[in-house]
Length: 386
Image 1: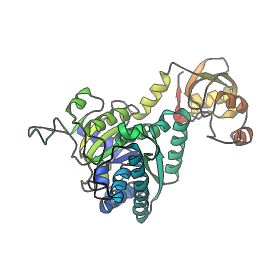
Image 2: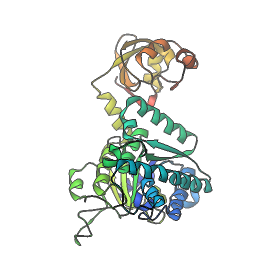
Image 3: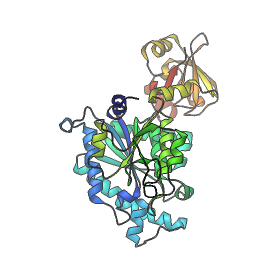
Image 4: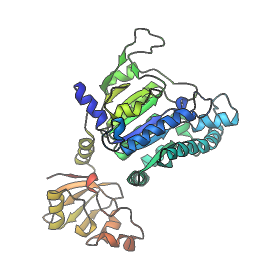
């Protein structure tokens, strides 16, 4: 990539996940760093508004993934060492989460931005229906100009506390909402070819391809005693994020105006570029999906809107349902002649879809008792195959 196109990866990103680590949030475990959190919130508010006076072109959708609950809880409880017992870690998370959420809410409100706390576990993103529910919630918050602040639900999980990290959670959130960019703010400038603390000859990596196996060989081991992750978890997170077409930046969290400068296309930290564009990655995944759970037959009008106008599939255009599938499964869409014209992610199960055939979206709630989405398959979750 040329320098110009690398800068475009940054400046053209419109949906951005910002992940910040425990050591930064809590000033190396000394308690929530109000000034630092205030600075990130100021920058995120500017990005959300698209402030032209600081060189921004257009508004951004921002999602914050913040560590720090356990570290803040340790400080409030007077613990100087991270405990090993799961129940103590959960207790620290419960205590610290109160202060963490309050701090973000206060600082974002000072800059005119509403916020929401979202607690997730990896299980939420592994279960099909919970995955879609989490996605719908986050996208709805963004539509209403609310900035979600996400943390792992450390109070109720156990293996995630022992083995998980919020770098991974940041990547999974980037996949979940189809972000353009994942920004991992850390206590290091970025990635070096070796640990610069042990090897004075280590060279800084300005950019590389996300998923390159050589990157994992460069990365060191564990991070600080406060946090859970190290540089390796950030490299793996970048590889995960690239799966849905999101590039990743690993940068020093105390770099002045880091988020604003990245949004203007300035090269800060290490940029790990996704080899596949966001839309193409998602569409290709659906097009190549071999385990179709079922099929939806549509009338000529619906087929014409899908093929010619790029519209979503509405229940009113469906004429039949084949197979047994759940919400979130990939299904085929067939025209009146029985030929597959598209495939996509179903918003309703096969049993529900059968009830919705020929029905307008306004009747979904009356028929099912609830409305997940007005579409059977949204155009963003649909790829044409003919």
